[in-house]
Amino acid sequence: MKRKVTKAIFPVAGLGTRFLPATKSVPKEIMTLVDRPLIQYAIDEARAAGIKEFIFVTSRGKSALEDYFDTAPLLEAELRRKGKDDLLELLKTTNMDSGAIAYIRQQKALGLGHAVWCARRLIANEPFAVILPDDVIAAETPCLQQMVEAYAETGGNMVAAMEVSDEKIGSYGVLDVKEDMGSMVSVKGMVEKPDAGSAPSNLAVIGRYILTPKVMQNINRMKQGAGGEIQLTDAIADQVNTSEGVYGFRFRGQRFDCGSKAGFLQATVAFALARDDLRTEFMQFLNEMTAINKAAQ
Ligand code: G1P
Image (cartoon, rainbow, N blue to C red; front, side, top):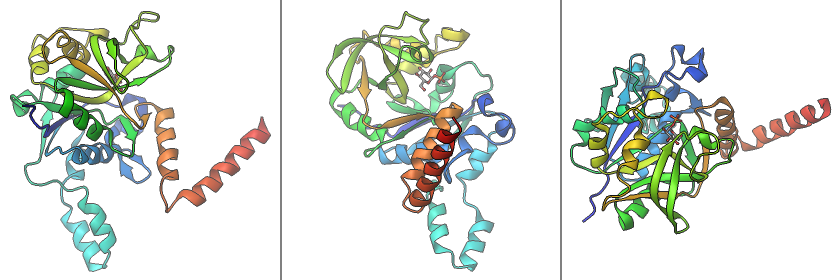
């Protein structure tokens, strides 16, 4: 019987250097798309998929994350006094049940595989999800939920996958496809950040994973991969020829690379346009800006 996936790891130890100077004092995951931090989108997606235990792999300077998910007694008392029930309601979505959230520190930046491995004792012998909050996915059915539903059929290991261009494929983990079944592919190999021209396909790994505890054991070997880092991709690739196997899942939705400035801006525009309270005014502004830019060209 396939076990339910109730634990998720959120690797949030990165320095966020691409967003300096902002990330000098604000963790990247607290940066906001409209009015919600990146990490809130990841948590909401995990909750929708049935995750009950949230494990953050953090590092020095990330304490704002812990405060964000805590209650804020002074702020709440003030809002209550002013009768701001709508804002109190909004704050509730940021609170976690006692014991539902755990923070583990990755003391050395040795790679994504190593970050995930830091949570091994909390995962113990259960399947688990990994969510990279940089990858924000707008979807009618949240991406991890789509994967949990597909996983109920396949079991094994599953990674979110998406076609990317030849120019960009070298920035991703890439799937070597055994059999393409449409929304699902079975995988015979995986390569992290392949050199130009050597990618086995254009199907890239996007930051959502459902993994077996064996992947943790594979990371135990601490094999250095691309960029001298301990790569999660390599530890998953070690599972391809096992009975559990590895599947790529082409999710339905739009993915934004919020690890890059351009992607973050695109996500901001898309999420603002999706908001009833902002759409009309923002659209008008965008139209004006586009017209001004065109005229200047
Ligand atoms: C990580 C993973 C890579 C994956 C990517 C998705 O890379 O190592 O396999 O394709 O996330 O965003 P990073 O973006 O941290 O370099």
